[in-house]
Length: 324
Image (tube, rainbow, N blue to C red):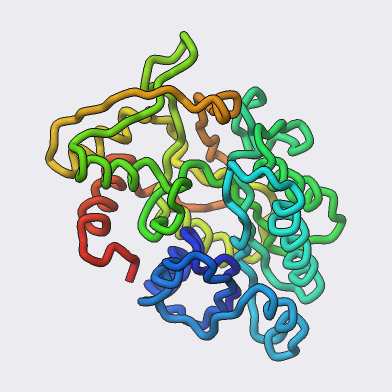
């Protein structure tokens, strides 16, 4: 049995789907349906029970769960990079994570949790998951809440035998629909192109980057969930791992792939980056995934164009776009 916190969210529900694809349904889903549409992410999936966060603390003391659970996939968090309430972020991304870690350590369970590429800040020290987390300078409160937990874990003298923190880069794919403003540019592009026949991207405010040529490491959620399961199946592993494709691509590349998947000629307009986020805007991210490969995880299987086509054709263009 596995516990998945944040199970109704984007990556959490995709993970439940991937486990189902492997024939695994003995899953405890932990989340809160505050957003009216999040329930749809789980509607077609199989799992043993759904538990709200408040009740979750109680089941951690239940001898039956202590006996049955093999590990926790801890994805429950506030994932908004624009959230400013540091106390709220600490409650959800730091203290809650400590509870899950301590339980896994005490009872010998495996622990895999979501860190973030936001911990790297502008990337002045690179995007290497071997970099000491105390050297990283996040650009926003969200990134700091994540690096705070990474630092705490690194200082623990005793850890679960499987203890992996995952630094997600720009993840996109099915079941992100409830994220509204935090959803991927693939999702936003699809709908804007369908409605207006064009897409808007942020222009560059730096002379060393042309408009739309800012780069990100875009990674498909199906690669992410496969790696998570591979880590959970290991007997022993410890550390932080970049979860990216390992190759930076431009926003123009991404948007052009959406147009191509819709069999349309690209039409892109460039707009100013809003001033309130301009100082926090990253112009380049690229995951070093050599450590991921060294521990035996599989190669990325979804290059950008292939991933965008799968997402657009097999999900976004369907009446029901959810993973089933």
